[in-house]
Image (cartoon, rainbow, N blue to C red; front, top):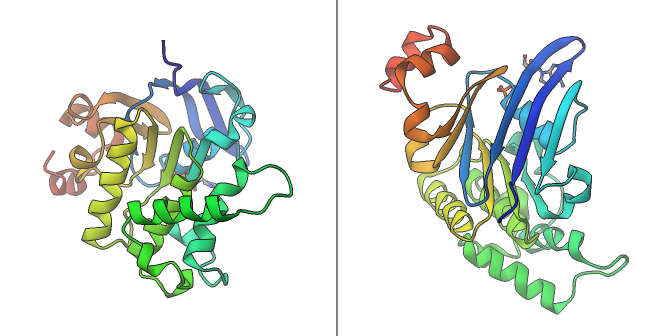
Length: 246
Ligand code: ADP
């Protein structure tokens, strides 16, 4: 039987004594594109960062592919929020994607022809190969996001974490990103995406994690998008709910 992609048991995380996640438990099976949704400050980014072992947890147990995160780090690709990246950093598109090959290279070995060809193939998958010599700072928001997705693909990971990949992205980049994520899911990979609202959740994801510090609901998109469940997470933010057509 395939290993559970992510298993979280009774996860508690706080910042300076303020609880951000309170007793979250769930497991995600491979081959799903899962959206993490919930209001601002619900702990969505915190959940991803805890899953990546980037922040300490107060309590709880996290297993990725049946192991502790540090043992499977190479199998996890992370695309941070666009505003967490220094876009003035002088690096070309191709070199940014090549960085994705480093975790799988033997120590002190630089990428060679084989890795360059693979990086180009990854750029092709996101429709960005013609931009390979550009500086990343010269690209539009959508193009930058596609390059970072190509870098994640170059890593040949099993699990992909993306934090708000659709913010500041044009429609054709959005469609391209969604297609690549769905292809990954068809290949049995697992994709976890932080997404700040419910609009298009149906188009983007097949499962949802609905958070508001606690786990409000987890399941197939149509099981989670129910008015009483959404109301519990958004606690009477009626204008928002009306906008979403809930
Ligand atoms: P979301 O991604 O759902 O908007 P976050 O996970 O970013 O929520 O934040 C959850 C809560 O934790 C918020 O109240 C936020 O202010 C707080 N928080 C997040 N990061 C930090 C931090 N580095 N230091 C202190 N508080 C933080």
